[in-house]
Image (cartoon, rainbow, N blue to C red; front, side):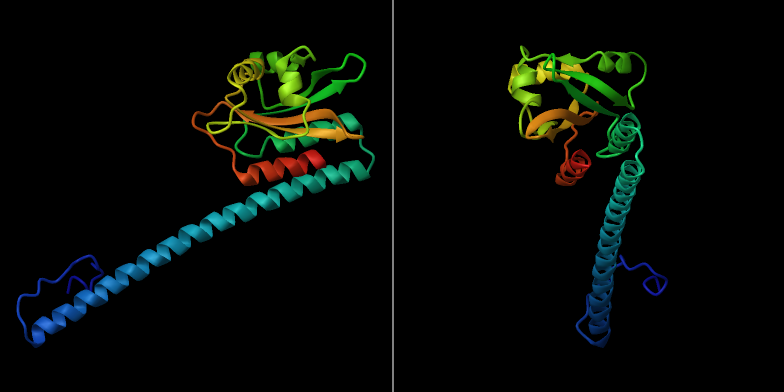
Length: 213
């Protein structure tokens, strides 16, 4: 009666070797199979939810990229297009902040062009960031033909990591170089101040798509 009412976790105590005992064993096997099937369905449901979230994330990213493409094709001001690109990139990887560093060709320094997400003193600090050639961050982090990752599993040289996090006031950061004629012209970055955070392969691929755009 309990099993028929839905209590599939109940197990019958079988202590006799006759037809009644055999029936008890059969019921136990059936309820075990039902429990296993329900566990599998739960796993499928969780997996389906994960897939749907991933699909929604990709759709949002595609929509954002299309908006940027539309601005470019319609001849929007470069400043507006860059702001939109930085704003949209902040929605990647649970980021608190997104920024764009531009290289000043005359002075050969990276200066902060756009910041999105940061507020108050943090925004003022980020907008004042300038990275000069004499700094290790310039030569060993930004002016390179490769991605920069800072999270719980990825570090630069110890002193360089400390310098970078102090300058940008972020605990985790993902930076992608942007090229013009084979030279690093700008750096698109996203970051947050979460503890124990790690960037995924998807995060890296999506930011790469934004940087190419």
